[in-house]
Image (cartoon, rainbow, N blue to C red):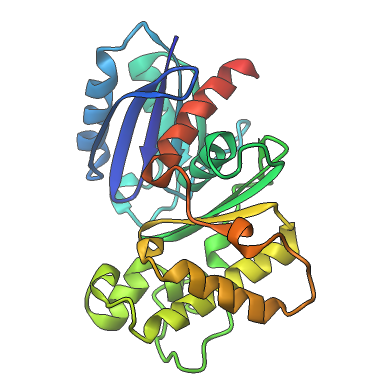
Length: 289
């Protein structure tokens, strides 16, 4: 039995085929352009497996509609990627491939991947943030992805501005939110160059760590998860995780006794495969529920 996974990111799509053991048999990535161009590549990838795929898990950039009873369930809704606004993603897949679809956000899929096969394995509660082109958060508790009337938008929590940061923020809705101040594009707009070109000892990284430590602090008090995993391109800065741990420890003081920070605040064990493996696991979950 084979399962499909689609990590539909705002910058690139990753499609994969795997088995019940969550082993990736084939994967392919390509840039996110228009729905017509991008989805044609998705259909081409899965076409040779037609008849052998039991189900497909999709983790998509958002916002998306996850309410099954909603008339726009399965749609990407009011995304800033204009070509994808109000795109019926699940409908397009069902029409082309005729298999059951598990539909969630890209960060929820990555969180579920770490829950099933990464640093969250064996734990009851896992929280995952991706810090990259945007900032998003997902949570899994007792095997269930946390959601209410919609999926969480943790990347837009408001922050206290660092006293050495005069940057106005890039989020058109909130300015001083996590995504507006700490995402990859926010760093790029500050300096006029990509985050990965900024030296590891640049003083800015203490500001970035302060913002991400505020995020972890808020998350700890709201959810008290067993582990918090920080992924995405910005977190590939090797010095950043330890700076976040130090800042978080200072902010929390002795108020809450968390697990040791070397076990509590981590980067993904599955690295760049967390999203795809999560999608495969959700495809399996779709058939079992």
